[in-house]
Image (cartoon, rainbow, N blue to C red; front, side, top):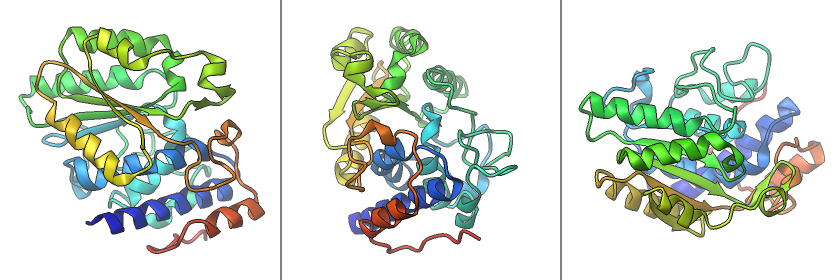
Length: 285
């Protein structure tokens, strides 16, 4: 699975995201497009898992938890293209009785989904619990991964969990912040400035790594491998991953209005024209 393939997969995942959201006439394209390289790198180069033998417990496997559940389109696309469920099921996104709800839900027993998420701030607490469970089960080679939005850091529960993880030396855990500087009502600086996140997490005794180009799949793989090499050393690990909201589509780039807005038919066609098709779109019927 070389870099050329992974880049092609990123193009296709972005096509999936746009088609899903347009077809549903609702969803969150901005953050999903911005986090594509992270999900592709995580599921195709970093994590240990068996999509054909999915269990809620995930014994002997690495586990991932999506905290900012509104970017479910990128999550569903990558799960389907990693073999968890048929790609054609993407066409049911946000439909009545679909397993692919707007926010991930365990109700439909969709393979790959271990928690219902979308109530921001909760994912780090859940991840810490999973990391402690792995230690109690003596699964010392298993790692817990989670993803959070930078706007999500407005939630107080995040900081309680961060304090706990550092003080309890949860060192089989790698959290990543999607640091795009945008949230639903504007920039993070306008809504509630985050300050020096690196120093803040370091003060809670986290090992903090930073990648300033989170839309380069090779660099994302590199920072995730570096983080993985830092596990087991007495500190939880945080990756500050700088991405661009709406990456891949020029009229969405860095614009918070695309946090939760569906493209119309004309916008969809313009966007798709900027994303080469190489792996095959799913049917909408």
